[in-house]
Image (cartoon, rainbow, N blue to C red; front, side, top):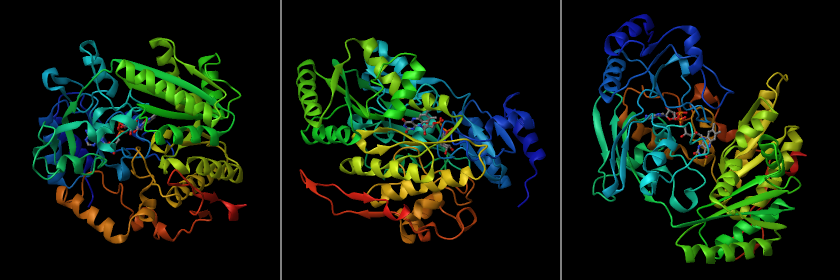
Length: 500
Ligand SMILES: Cc1cc2nc3c(=O)[nH]c(=O)nc-3n(C[C@H](O)[C@H](O)[C@H](O)COP(=O)(O)OP(=O)(O)OC[C@H]3O[C@@H](n4cnc5c(N)ncnc54)[C@H](O)[C@@H]3O)c2cc1C
């Protein structure tokens, strides 16, 4: 169906305040991609509603005219979720930035979707509360985007991801109906449609108000920095700490490449430049509990081969250590103007072997890969560095990214931990799910959006976007899952042999 975009613009201008409709080509350019800059497509029109009623009015219009739409928060997504494919209408929530209600007695806060993640904690920290999910992009990403991606962060090891912290949502369905999912209570008897919506990447409607769970700030927090001369040793430390029953708030690893990039960014040596890997461990809770956990974690890091262990001496020192980790992507961005972030998950015990295999792939493809990751969750973020002006490089980058994901699946993991499927990984979804599984997921989507207008083409593989079944793109990797068993945990031996 051909869409009359000039008419759509007129209709939107009639529904929305002045300056809430963006139609000038040079202004639309600002919306032509998200954090995944490999793929770009300019929307036909962008609207910037301020209220739920305005969102509902625009979606009723889209429904009546058969116009596909894409919700957009801050556009930091790394899987192309906010990409306006085929020139769809973009509905950006950047003017929906009010904190609607703070209910400290019940430890809840209700916000509009465009509210920035970091603002939630800022709004309640003076009262001793905080919001736990903390993506590294938390100074800029929106709560609506977090909900749609079910985002994680460094503290999600202990406290869970976004879905563990959303109590209730006001949602505008693709036909413009306003509804509520969840009940604001910790438990409620109905089918968990709140859970279905979280992580649905904008394909089931638009969240317009979100009630989040707040946590009491812990009495005591300690951060340890352990450095290792081998990545395997850092992985072993993670395994030992977890096996000992210590549950850190976060456990993150940066490799040598990333350490140096961050030190360069800081302009001083915050992390030891010659280390193969550094491991950051945050421990929180009651004073005595933290003291004991610091002892145990420190000892286990030493046992795994840590060269030095430093405990942050002050809140400022703690913040600085985390700042380095959270600035890692930006630090790498200073080295190369373009990089492609992968996001895969593997069982913790497979981390060292998978990282070694990624290094081998990096050499084979002649593309540098920096590794910084949520080690406690086995959630890898290999950053593939490239120069966009090098002929044929995009194909190589994508092939390397695909091989890394194949590696994750072979190791018993997943093609995404927290960045979503979006447009980037839809062609790999059938590596993980059988046709029946995918058909069932599609049925759920159709129940919310029978006309298929909400973020069409995302998540699911289609012949148009993927050609032949991606399942048939046989991997060149050979993986043996019969490695040694340690503490009851299988350690796969991964051999990217036949690629060399
Ligand atoms: C430097 C950097 C670090 C990052 N670190 C992390 C990290 O540690 N953990 C992590 O999980 N992610 C991380 N990300 C990825 C990204 O920040 C998250 O996915 C974030 O949740 C996206 O939020 P956004 O507001 O930018 O959403 P967008 O990119 O604008 O949109 C993301 C998806 O959400 C949908 N959407 C947006 N708003 C709504 C809404 N109101 N209702 C329904 N659907 C909606 C969009 O259609 C799209 O599919 C990082 C990204 C960068 C650039």
